[in-house]
Image (cartoon, rainbow, N blue to C red; front, side, top):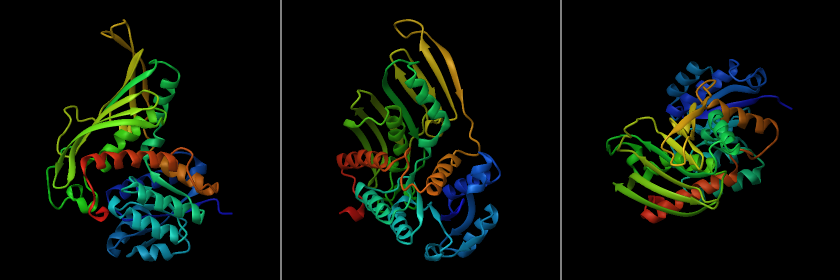
Length: 348
């Protein structure tokens, strides 16, 4: 049995550069010697051969292909990281699984529950590993935050607030503003707000939601959402493509009965501050803990190492970011889109 995975990257764009950087960091020992030896940077595929060759040279991949089909047909490819825009995930994932490859697919794996179901059912049928690449699920800082919550430091969690607001002025050529490419703030940014709240609510089921949206050219440019979980926790969040947040740090606050936790850049957290109230009114508080968990590389290394370990262990599903968690995530986004009357062209 092989003790390493021949990894390939499909579509060498911005996210692929981040993943390739993480791969190289692991190879250089950023995590452990065992994880360093378990990953082999084997191939990259683009629709443009020259682009693939440049990427392969930059990140030390053995092979470069000028078509996705060549990658799927290479018998030495064990697993593929799908990095193209999410409107194309379904086709790419299905082709990769049909070719017998394990798959780590950038978020959101599917643009709808029906797409996700198609992926997971085929992965089960083929006995192959498949996981949505939700890097937030593997974040060491957030794992420590969850431990602080479980220990009762801030008491019972009541509310979770988060903001993922970027200013990206309207451009008809930008995929984020294109309905046919599943554009909009929700699937690109809001997905992190939802998953973060799911994590901090211990994956309790969502029992109610309400929202507001500002549509632009058929996609949500801005949204404000409230979700209520079965365990009583409520989250309020905003995600936006055309409005920045004044703090410019994508902040989140977890409020408990005894205190609160503040987090900068919650979706890629490396630092969190834990506060407890000093009086019953909460008008005074003190910081009792500072959580510092810098990335070993850039944050992508943890999901990659986990996927590699699952593949080498013969697992077909993650026990951290499971099919169930991916399904709960896309179900919320489907429900919100239904409320907004936001349908992608292929859904009509």
